[in-house]
Length: 236
Image (tube, rainbow, N blue to C red; front, top):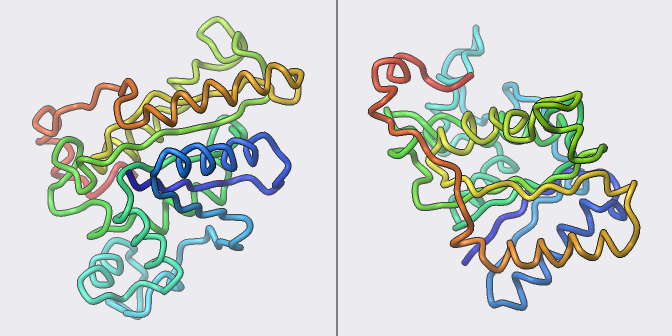
């Protein structure tokens, strides 16, 4: 199995860093191939604009999807974006490794999605959900949150983790055809001791070794949304 880990944390000694290093070690030892896009180490620019392209469809007005369609048809993406698109095309499974910030993705990872998941490369042509471009690939969120589990529940201060991750699971992964593996969540890594952190790493090892068969979130059928989604170019 070929696994792409998109890592979004600015501190290498963080528990997110430990999870990514652990993933590489575990997967490599099991004979899998791994590639890590460490977005902060790469200095990845999350701002999506004309710098995405080496081609120009309309010099007067930047219509993102039209520019993406042209770039997809004529190999007109900036080299740094093409490299990331090639990684997504290469992988059998993709892991987003990140901390929840303000109940969402860190800006650098959201910007990676905005720039890399382009028309013609990630979606388009009526291909979505179970007919999406990435059907056959798996995707998983591995994440940390600042508080304990009860805070991230229907009875807590915030919604459940499932509700918080819905825009990613449904709007990014499932929309483009990925099979979405249930998330791996570490609650309050700065609030627990070393034994608890080691226990999380052991559980993560089990998840990684079973990534190709781990429980998945139900994907909607494209037929259920044909009338609506066919009139919309993306979930955005």
